[in-house]
Image (cartoon, rainbow, N blue to C red; front, side, top):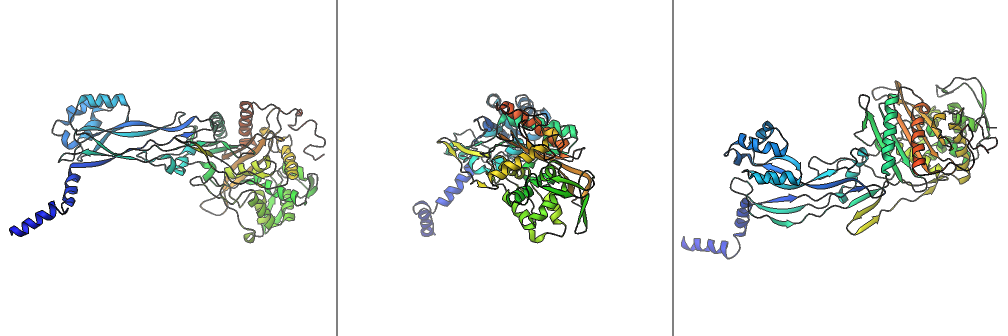
Amino acid sequence: MAVLLSGRLAELQVLGGGQRYLAYGQSELYRVVSIPALRGPILDRQGGVLAMSVPTTEIYADPGEIRRSGVLAEARRLAGPLGLSVAAVADALAARQSFVVLAAHVDEAVAREVERLGEPGIGELAAAERFAPDGNLALPLLGWLSGDGTAGIAGLEEQYNSLLAGTAGLERVEVDPAGSVTDAPVRVLRRPVAGAGIQTTLSPVLQFEVEQLLGRGIVASGARAGWAVVEQPRTGDILAVASLVNEHGRAVPSPDELAFTDTFEPGSVMKLTTFSGALTDGLVTPTSTLSVPPDLVLGGRVFADAEPHGLETLTATQVIARSSNIGTIEIAERLTPSRVVAWMRRYGFGAPSGLHFPGESPGILKPASGFSASAIGSTPIGQDTGVTAIQLADAYNALASGGVFVPPRLVEAVVGPSGRRPLPTGRAHRVVPAGVAAELTQMLEHVVAPGGTAPDAAVPGYVVAGKTGTAQIPSSTSAGYVPGAFMGTFAGFVPAQHPAFTIVVVMDRPHADYGGVTAAPVFSQIAEFALRSAQIPPPASPVGPDGLPASAEGNTPSGG
């Protein structure tokens, strides 16, 4: 027995077999605690802070130790400094567990006041709190963090979490047999590394104004929700994105960034693609005439225009200015189903924007092979198709950029201790010839002129090019559409001949159905503010009372 015992002792003390027991003993004596890393900031295009993390302190308690000293007495002493009721603190201190958070985020002054109390069983841990200097500005776009504040769970916070989060540190604290942290010195095992920041393309001034104007439009129209996008031609920079919902007559940030995640039938704003294809393929010119009947029957379905009329002759310019469904369908029939779909794809519909925003929808675009007998009528006028607001903004931005599709950009650089690192952008590609882009732009100017569908989108002193969209909302419970429910849209750019801003406004179920009545006025207000803030003067060529260049000849809604 003596020999066996001596051998076992030698194994444990000399040969290293006791390391397992040493580790076990230390695990009973020490606890490794995470030190949160400061999350990197999210910046606007000028370098201003949209969201940042600030160091705070977490006050915790060991109820097991406190019960021995008197819960109520300690609760009375702690309630004041923590800004809590005595009852709330007492309930926490009476919990049957060894670790309870009393206050998640307190500043340095409060932490020192609690420390001076010297209450047994009360301790503090380093923590961090996300702070937005501008409150809820761009909140759905920036996103949210998890409950413990360590991970992004929506928006840019989620998309760039690996960059923003940084690396948490580790420290070793000593605990007593009851599991409570003692006053022994803390040993830092690994220091935290702060996360990198990201610089967005957002203009904070424009973002604020877009949210204000959109909110007023939502409340005034009684819409359930609304969203708006402002994009910069030539660069694709997204200057503002707003998504608001109507909460009992008050516009508040939506839970999701609807401009990226919500898919809806666009209505006539989609006619851009059919006219682009027809002009490029030489099937029509701006002054081509079409015989437009009161209605069309395709595949047993009757198509008509918003306003009843008899047989009439319209130019292609009049067709788009008045948003004639029948005239557009006649042009689409010349283009053929396969070309209609191909042109939609060329403008980016049916695919994600390339921004990789969390939850972004690619939209819905049927292949030509799946067309029904009536689809050549419904698809070109924006039915049977799902789009997002960002897709519409990109499409109209392509026209504003002279026919070149410019990939959108929302985050332009990563910012860290080593400096600023620009992020790569997608490759631009031509969608329509420059000449066709110029022709179509002039045609879209008539949409905003008297006689068009959106004179309310006009901006005094400037020429606006754009298109309205009014679409029924498909039912989620049965075939067909929701009775009396519409999406109102206006998409366009300004100044028409030298665009500085592409703007899309969408209203969800406003009281008045037409996009020219609900979305167009908000477009006008946003455009006017953007032009004024950017100090872009009106064009040298005077603008006539119809909102078109006064020097243009034959440039009237009648086609001249």
